[in-house]
Image (cartoon, rainbow, N blue to C red; front, side, top):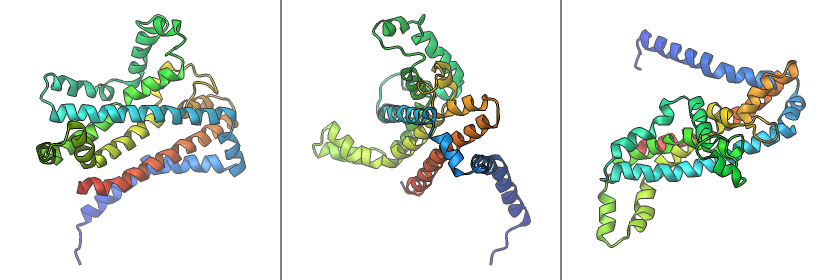
Length: 271
């Protein structure tokens, strides 16, 4: 039997205690406060017209942003790793802009570009396609802030798998599309899946950039994170309890994402 030094056990205890206080305890507290008045009360807050609208708007935003960023992420990773085109370093740096700039600044930039007095806002408004203070703007903001995740997950996998299989496929007469669909994509599927999971998590929880471009109208342009913010500002215990109920919805969706990440992690290590 191997006896571990005391300092190792102490370090583990401190790490676990830190995580428990910082992550687990707040989530448990939210669940307790949500159901302290009974399941029926919590369910009534989750099924109000505003809550249902916010839920489906969040799902819509994720359903649009995730596929777009997946397609863009895979294509960009191929350009960065497989292409010899000039300007790759500039593109590589630009990909990380959403990590560097505050989401609020991103939202303000979108207002500058697509607002009623923005560069292109008037053109879209004249054609009945407003961007700012509309779900379209919320989708664009979410696409922007969640853009790097798939790229940064796929690129290392492309480096690891190398080009031998792709070269062999080309030697056997496969076209570029055939090589991509039958060789490249299957070899990077774990990285793609992991990028999709991270992109989904960011898309569901984004509030900074989305809050700037949203009109904050209940039942129209309020997503679940915005609904939590709105309900915390409603006076009385009902507003706080309703906010906790909405927080539980987001927590459950986040736990689903966490489970997906856990399931994918062993596969990713073996890839």
